[in-house]
Length: 229
Image: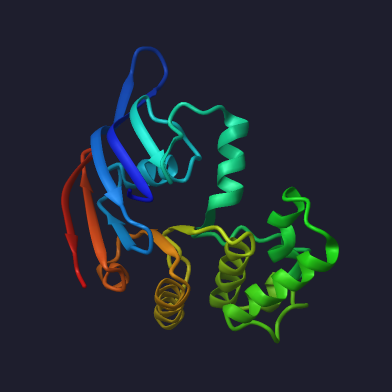
């Protein structure tokens, strides 16, 4: 059974008046546990909408989405939030760190909602920061860290709840070339050594090249899906 399976997913956004935008036009795909998948396509192709549905941040207009065998396409918002917290770690282009909060406190944030003790929160956050190579930066604030280091803190935050899936939306978009490739090597390590399933949205071919499979979107449809390694 695939970890992720979508069947004929469609997403229509209703704008002012009678205007409708078809973001996804009947997409079907499956992603196995432990895959490293890059999602590519031009602006407006549907790749970000697809990512948002996979991440339970949005729901499809029609079609079905099975996550770990559960049909999540018809769940309510609070149920989707619970699934996100347990099964999915997010990494965004803008890092989304709290500026007045230290690295370790930023990493601890998801665990507040999981009702984990202070001691265990601190231990898990330290381990996550060690995993991304920032054990010597735990008390630094975001403005004391480089862009690449801030994104590593964001990855550590995505790891702390032991979610089996990492979803990254243009994670290298605000980084220089060197930091971008260092970050991608970290994703490869997490995929190979921990077995995390990684789904990455990018418009850069060299970044997609780190993945093991590339799904290409155009006009709300998958136009190509191939394994690269």
